[in-house]
Length: 254
Ligand code: ADP
Ligand code: MG
Image: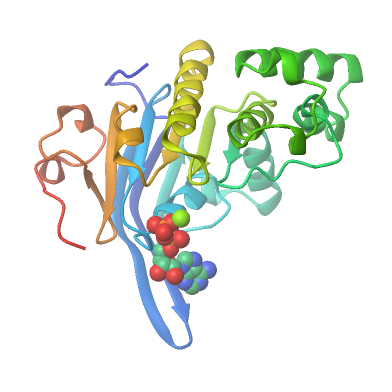
């Protein structure tokens, strides 16, 4: 579901800078980074280890804040919110999936997925119905009573994806969700992300190491020298998403 539109981007990063200070040394991981993500986009973020992919994802999810620069969500300055406003934003609008699934081992797949509902005081029956619907969507209808230890790595990640979508976030962020999986299983995870994007409209941003997996996503960017450039120089799909002069840029040697 990828369209370049003239409408307001779901997310707009403007002049984002992220500097870390570590033992007296300064490291500028993201430098004047500009990027627009539209509602319904499927984005793959690539780049070598240490390039700043996780840093970027954490900013998108407001788990981290930029040193300077602005992030607009639906045109609104996200980091201008109070800390409770930010927490509410994150809770309502963002779903996260990580390399390790972080499922609770003593609970079933169904219970893991409905957990955000129970914490949010949703009625149990309602939470269960929603969790069942999501588990069916990720292809685990016949695994709902299994505990994480009784599921394969790919199935565990599917449960984690279902859980991340429980609250109907607009944005699903996945940081190397296939990092622990073989290529075929990883391809299945990417397929699930695409299907969910198409059936629910959720905007998907996934960090991946694997160029074969990145190719399954229509929008592909590299984190390179603190900026975002196309994985394929001249990629027109990035028009309106990164600045025109960056579209033609070729990746530099790391
Ligand atoms: P990637 O996900 O692309 O492998 P990261 O975004 O995790 O890279 O990290 C980018 C760089 O920023 C690395 O050099 C890392 O050591 C550094 N970095 C990340 N988080 C911190 C932090 N909290 N404090 C200091 N340095 C950090
Ligand atoms: Mg990382």
